[in-house]
Image (cartoon, rainbow, N blue to C red; front, side, top):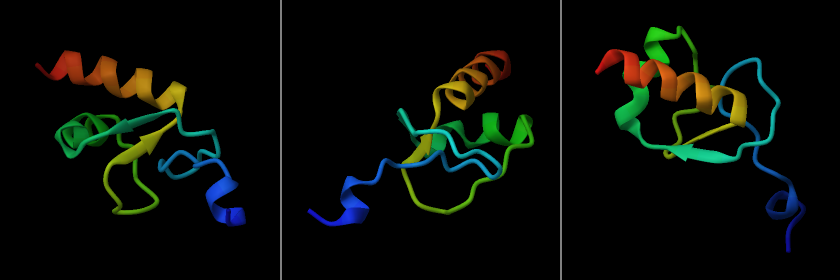
Length: 64
């Protein structure tokens, strides 16, 4: 295995170096925008840490 493959994925949110634990699809982008969170990359699916995942899910529920 490559070192890159062994390295844990990081959260895609700018300013966060947490370990990515969840993947989100592009349907949750409006929740990201409402929280004024910016992504480091345009890759999909969006990988996020536990902290940002819970923030995005709460915002998503509020937008419904």
